[in-house]
Image (tube, rainbow, N blue to C red; front, side):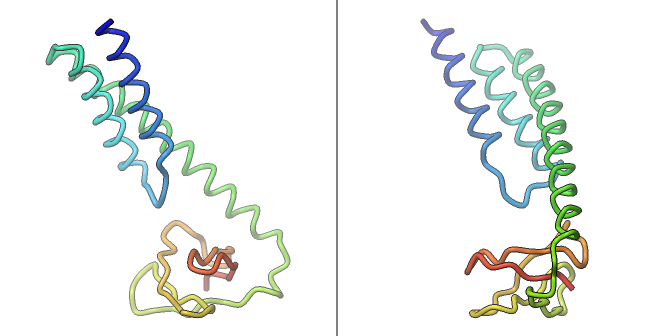
Length: 132
C-alpha cells in the first residue's frame, strides 16, 4: 500500500511540475526535474534512490526544456508569415529585453527569446503587437 501511495504521489508531482509553464528556460526545467526526481527517489527511503531520481529527473527536465524551446522558436517563426500592417509596434525601453506595450495601461513586457519583428501578446489586454 505504501508503494502505491508513493507511486501516486510521485506521478502527481511529476505531472504538476511539467504542466506549470511560463517564461522558463531549459535550466529551470533541469532544476525542476531534478527536484521532482530527488523527492520521488527520497520517498523510497534511500539516499541512493534520491540521487538517481535527481539525475533521471534532471535529464527528463532538460529534454522537455529543449523541446519547449524548439516549439517556441517555430511558433515565432510562423508569426513572420502573418500580415503585420494591422499591428502596432511596441516602444523600446532602457532595459534589455523589455518593451513598452502600445496598449493601455502601457506595461513593460519581457520579450526575452522573442525575435525582433515577431508578434507578442500583451498579457494585460490579450492583444498582439510587434516587437521592435
